[in-house]
Length: 464
Ligand code: ATP
Ligand code: MG
Ligand code: MG
Ligand code: MG
Image 1: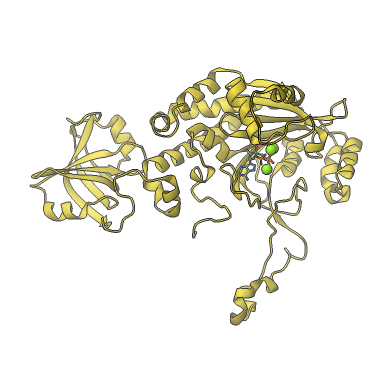
Image 2 (image 1 turned 30 degrees about the vertical axis):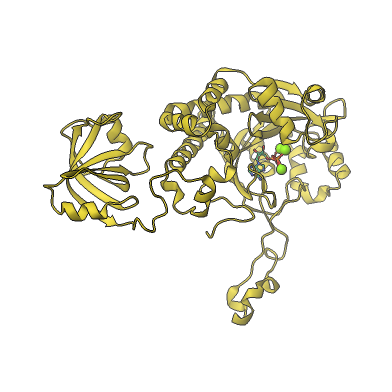
């Protein structure tokens, strides 16, 4: 008999169907003569209710073994359910316990645990309702992202994880070293730093962004995107920064800042729409249990255009804001997350795209405007989060780009290949970087970025 996923049974299962399920026990209710066991296999938020009858083989033993957390396989027949909110349940014929979970020591008993506590048992937290919902939505977001770009003819390109370019010279890099543990005397293995070598004789880093390499590919394939892990050695303990996170970076040839903004907006709308359609139960759950604006936010994103405003106008609004900001607001300074949140959350009550930032606070590769003071940059700011996307039109003029590099203290020779893209068949082009975890945070209302990635890497990560 084929094992059926519980999500499918709850949706499509019919009375009298015989089937097998496999999963983990969420709860048990012993009603003398029969028992209800709630089983979850990760395919949906809802559990399937299994009914055990005293007449079935080994009933007493099963009842003792089937505690919260135990793994089990059940053969049975679907019957209509009398239970509230459930259409169908499984009348068990036989059941096989794979592994018990001792109620004295299994940490996930039937009660609500704080996210702080669950972070200390990162290897078990995916078995809770909240993390089940988060990782299903995360999966749906990833699917929607590929769908969006593939439908539009973008090529998915794989940029290097180990790279020789430090991208923007922005700092916060992890370096890659190599050493052969076999060559290190056993007594000195604690001190392995002495044996570490550069990457085959040169400097190498973990990538902080695949943008520059994606530009290479865009200059051949027109429209490309990356979707992969990125690393930043930021020792910050904010609720929005990780040392390892995923980025989505489209890059489009023959595209300006307006095309870039239009694409980013259509992109976010598509992802929200897809998740609302495919994960409605999980989204309802977030709205009920995590943040009661989750559904309204999704509707808002899907149905409304984002606010678009220049950095200069945003500064003017922030200077007039009836709020005491912790950090100063002044033309030429970067926006802090409190400013970003004020604009999106309080003022516009929807995502805002801020454009044309001062040259001095943005990277060398952004297209210089005619005013010589600002660049064609755009950041998308989301309520409750702040920046979720950073993008720009890229400088396509060789002379201006070389000059910008020099004035930022970068050596053009180090990026000779990047300049070659301007020497041979240069075109206006643009792209953006979306922090994948920030998107999942924004969508689910989860307050801490550590709770939307299965294995958060932070200064104090768990043991795996
Ligand atoms: P922030 O100002 O929030 O530190 P940033 O401007 O340094 O972000 P970018 O270099 O523009 O970040 O990277 C593009 C996107 O990647 C950001 O808009 C954000 O969504 C995401 N991002 C950046 N740093 C992190 C991080 N440490 N952890 C998770 N996501 C990040
Ligand atoms: Mg940063
Ligand atoms: Mg920023
Ligand atoms: Mg940025």
